[in-house]
Image (cartoon, rainbow, N blue to C red; front, side):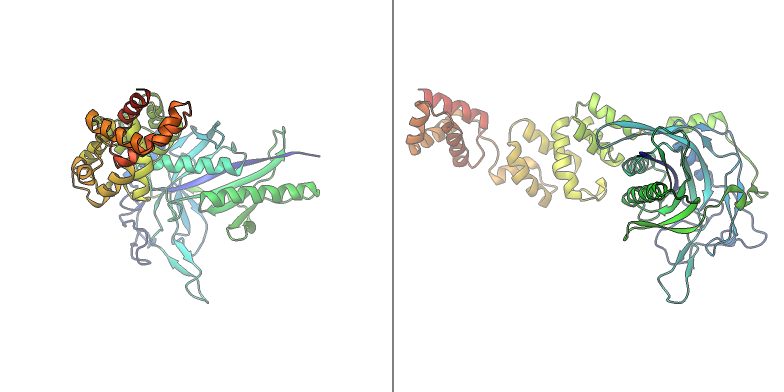
Length: 478
């Protein structure tokens, strides 16, 4: 029986977070009233002329350089002709002959810890279409042209992906990268990142790729994974029956988990590409490339490596804290203020991030110096870690401007290290639990934990555990 492998290539459309559109000054805004962010240029009135958006180009260069792509120092814009109701020009300004960059790669990490290098074929700049809405009116489709002209970067991979899990990992890594670079919010729910998934199957070991079908405009990582799984199984089932199929453009329905035909797949000739006569070639100098290269932030994989190798965090903590640039920046900023790295990582992962529940780091009410004071109480054994988390942290959330030491004092949880006070507590515990104390002296060592617990309870958790342990051991052996 023939064994098949899945082969996937992606075309990812990344919406740039520029202030204005790709070729005119219309402002960008998600969720604005329909058809309020339009002008004579974005509506393609006769005689209007487009003008390139410099930030569109610069943001494209940032992504190109972060992927080690080769920047084309001469870029050109082309017209891609097709007619949809949401395309006012009846063509799209894009790049066909001379895209912004070629080559490069993005390394992804899979669930089992293995890594894979996914090659980039090229990346080109273009503009988005508007949006056709089918569920407002029962008789007509509505068109919103606010999105028409939005600056996009389309990233095209080589067919290097072989499963839905790999596709999911690639999209997640790319989302993280564009957010680190500050060029897009990468939000698939808002349409800021969408992908077309090209899927084919071929016998394992064969170097000849099978006929591919393209699933258009997949709008979530989960849906991309599901689309690959369903479509690859559909193609394999047809081949096993001895049937063939044509290259098609498909729609994926998240509810049914199935793909369905939209139309036959277009070839380049169908679009009648030709150079846009209104836009001259763009020349990018080496000095401009060098300037953008110098301004690139530390990339997510570099940040994670630093956390592991220099800060000595474990794999899990490094993954969580490097997942978002603002989280990583917050962590390193507190490190510069002499925060204990492991205590800080533990606090951020177990308390701060759950408290924020997806909100920005800037929305945390507790000032950084208060966080430092909180951590120092734990590090200097003024408050036990468990008590700090269970009692002091909730009090700090309710009183974010109050010094943690004052809160700990008012809660009565500052650790007692006074030998005299602790010795008195131990005497009382042994007196009240004489049977268990005698059992310990006769060799029943498990009783020791019980006596420790009684001592901590009597001190209301404020006695230093190490001091209690030593005092109890001394008392039981005398």
